[in-house]
Image (cartoon, rainbow, N blue to C red; front, side, top):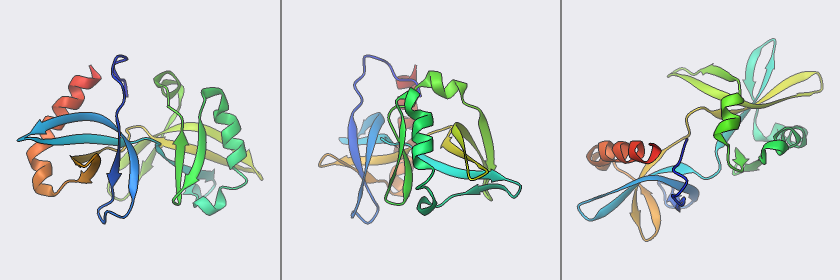
Length: 176
């Protein structure tokens, strides 16, 4: 994602639906509707997938299997100023994925039951005779939220319908 260089990146925590946990996010677009601020958020640390690529095809790994691979992937990512960490049973990218690096990455399509998703191959490593890939979604996850007390609150379907178009317009303006 390209951002205008003069814009500081605001961060806000996004509350989970049960309001028991928070996800640190960047604000990528915001609008005010009838005195209420709505934002489009993307996680501060991108979610990643680690997969084994073998004769059985691509098999996604669980975080419990990541131990021996972590130093290998971190060494491969080090020249880009990036690393991988496991937090709350998720693989997270630490550091900013630069557009120049992303453009050099190969992509792979993963066919889910619902849709085809494209992923960037950030790194590939060999371990115990197997090839492992570190994948990042080509398009980052985004969440629409209402801002209250300095935190993002998930939107109801009705609220989303009301502000979705305005948030898309604000995002488009910010990207150009």
